[in-house]
Image (cartoon, rainbow, N blue to C red):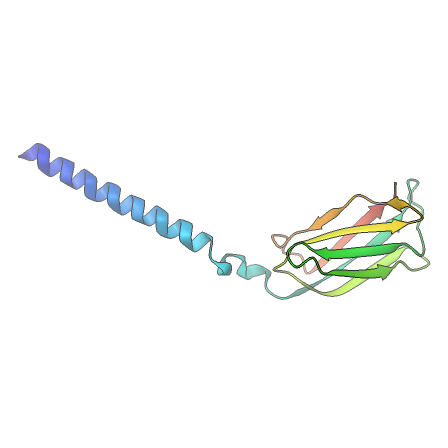
Length: 124
């Protein structure tokens, strides 16, 4: 009789723990899990060559990974670029191109909580 009670109690505890894990897993996958990254950010930086000299007139692309929408910006005479109102809850690819040269593609992640994302794009 005691053995059956102990097994029953153990099953209850195991069931409660399993239910708790399931609930925590479901809460973690809700859209609200990224709530700290709601709003807009800026994405800016500079385009440079292999010697870190600024490149004017490079086209900088910002591509939404989900919708595939692309925004572009032509770098200034000092190699600078700037994108405003970038949705913080989306992931983006960022790269520059000019004269058949291309930078490495960088990711602007929705997990990055910075309101001002600053980077350097080095042309190869």
